Length: 269
Image (cartoon, rainbow, N blue to C red; front, side, top):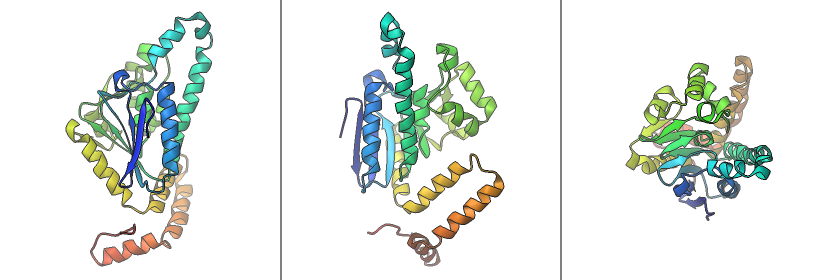
């Protein structure tokens, strides 16, 4: 299943979404947004899929906004007058893609193969677990290069992941954040050798795909709730979800496997 900019497929219970406009380093223009919308919508209803890998082809994961298209519109007086609404509509659709990725009933692994710039960094960080090639880096050109503000959720995500000082520093200076530094700062899960990125992403996705799906959904929801809950509310939420999960067949299998010193089998063979 493909569009000009996005390829997606399901194999051995792993869904893979690949940004494929490698000549343009995968800009988040109309074609990419349309492809992502289709891919996420189809994977949501794909019963065989148990985990997702989001990655890209070429030297970059995504350069973010399609600045070549923006330049064409800026140089056309008629188009420049409506550039704001055009960008707003495109961003609304891409924002929904990020929300839809977060709402998938299965975990998402993002494998960042190269530069993730601007909104491309926001997309790269939308996964439940993010791994990056050692040569990859994150770059926020919004303030220093374009006179714009961070988007695609970056102004929400980065302060929570890194703290205000580091988030603001990256945004104001436009300094590149290497994959190794991103791992050290806790922004991503791991940093892989370039040639081993695809294999590491697949191994991680397979581990997640073997886990009980309801427990994964509950884990994602409980960590999301922790962003706004106080401790009392979070303790109550943990208690209510745990009471539900200990009654599932998956929990029973996990307890039996632990006592029998074997790996649990949460899915039929």
